[in-house]
Length: 209
Ligand code: GRF
Image (cartoon, rainbow, N blue to C red):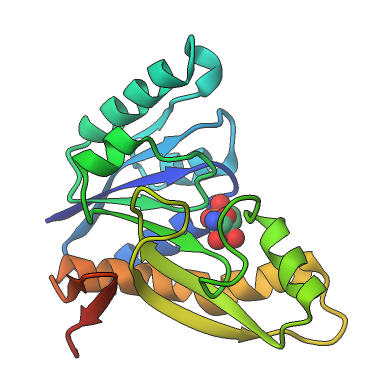
């Protein structure tokens, strides 16, 4: 069984996509063993509980300083003993010690086509505000490995989404989620669970199905 721990901060729609794809059999032999949130009371935790998945909250507010929080976060991940850590709308800077503990075993879903609209300051709706302000005609989503940088690890999958006249950041975010994120995140987990993703320097090679 390929065990994944999913880190969340908000609504949890990407978590739900993983839950649904396990339930419909697309993700064979994959199990979400723990959901970890940095925010109490977010709907992602409700989604986990409804699916019978252990859900824990590790909130920075409960710790003396960032160092203590980082230790608690890493312990919450280690305790789940995952094969893979999935950051699904997780708005916390991943501590270096966690990246070191799980080399090439942490992935993130970013709501743009990296290297566009990523890095410092680009998260949530701000990503789509940037895309609309630049006037791009195509945006999309990216699943990538997490390394010591911000949105800078090797890209695993990307999917393009059309920007339409009259789009607001909210409308565009919803389209990117529906047409890209909720597809490529489960697909990336499937490929990784089957050992089909190979990292060669800064790029990945994916075995054909
Ligand atoms: C999504 O757009 C995701 O790409 C970004 O955070 C947003 C919220 O995701 N990282 P979710 O609904 O909590 O999965």
